[in-house]
Image (cartoon, rainbow, N blue to C red; front, side):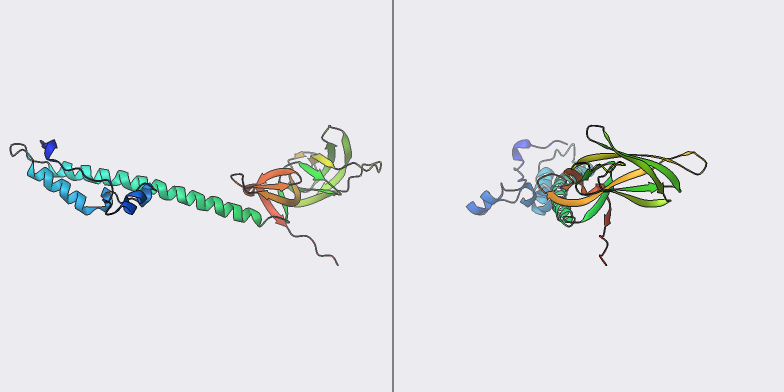
Length: 234
């Protein structure tokens, strides 16, 4: 289509400011500006001007013109959608931080084999069937602190270590890793998954996502498998 460019008016991408305060506010945020998709008067002005300045021998293709306007509006709406998604992300981060605070002081279980021993250490097992297991606990230097047999039932079970070796030696506070080798009644190996159980000491809200501190190690909320309610003393 032939259009006289000199006769085309400048179409504002935002609503014209009527005072100085309005012009200053227009630079704050893209999502707060009024764009062409929201200003029907701009559409009418642009359409009327093109109709007035079209070449009679080559009339304006209204279908193409309409498609261009629709595409322009869709692009702007997508930009606004991006702003809204950014706001939703901020809200989600705030929600995750609030959710993480709930776990402070709670005893939880997370996937892993290394637990912090300070008075006792607890590991949880998940077995597909009853099995006889050999449990080996080593310190951070690889020294064996404890080894012994343990009957693991089908489903979930726990092992609490009091820090004593088979010879009665009391081991110091530190990180200890458990290794489990299990066999069923036919002597076949059984895969055992382990979890570390401990209390959430604190939450780092500056991290994204928030980090829970359990026995000196950091975990995210989605790594928590279960919350364990302490047994009531009789």
